[in-house]
Length: 324
Image (cartoon, rainbow, N blue to C red):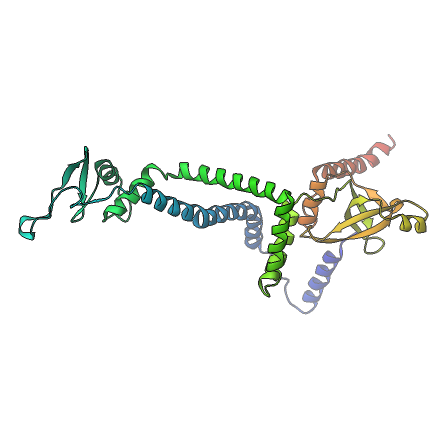
C-alpha cells in the first residue's frame, strides 16, 4: 500500500522515461543542509529572542534609568569647585595654569582643565579607569566616578528589577481596589477614542490578557472530536457541560469544547458536542497545546511509546501464531 505522494512520484518518473527524459538526480547536499537547519533553527531562534529581549531592556530601561540616576546623584553631590572657590587665583598666561592640586577645607582637590577642581579620590579613581571616550571636564570626571563606584551593572540591574517588581505589586494592589479599576477604565475609554492607537492597543491587550490574566476558563480534559466532518479528528478542551436546553434537545449529555486553532491556540471557537461522540485522550493540557502549536509535529511521548508497543505487538503476533 503506497501513499498518494509516492504514487504521484512513480507516475512522474514513468512519464519522464516515456518522453526520454531522465528523472532528476537526488540532492543529498540539499537534504543534509535542510536537516542541519532544522536541528539548529529552534535553539538559534531561542537564543536570538533572548538576546533581543536583553538588549532591548538594557537600551530602553537600564540605560535611561542609569542616566537619570547619575544626573540626580551629580546634582546632590556636586563637588566641583572653581579656582576662585578653592582660593586659587588664576595667574596671567605668562605664569602658566593654576596649581595642579590644592587643599580646601581639609580635602585635597586636583585640577581638571584650566580652572576646575574635583576631589582627589574622584580624580585618582577616574585616572585609573577613564573609559572611552576619556573625560575632559570636571563634571565628566564626576559622572565617570559615579559610574565606577555607584552605578555598576551588578548594583543597578538588581536594584531596577526589585523596584520594577515592587511597582508591579503596588499597581496590582491598586487595580484590585475599586478606585484603581475606575481610573483604568477611564484611561481605556480615552485610548479607544484615538483612531489609530485604539486598533493597536486592542490587539496588544488581547494578547496580554491571554498571557498574564488569570483566566476563568478551566480546562478539565482533552478530547478528540470528529470535526469539521466525520473521519477528521480535531483536538479540543472540555470547558463544561454546555447549556441545559441543548442537553434537553439532544436527550443525552453534551459537552462544551473549546477548539483551538494551529499554530496560535489563543484563537479558536466553542462547539457543543454529544458526550458519546468524544474520545478522551491520555495527554495533558500542556502536551495538547504543544501538539497544536507545532501543527501536529510534537506528539506526546506516551503516545509514541504506545504506538511503538502496538507496532511491536503487531509484528510479533504472526510469528507467535505460526504453527511449529
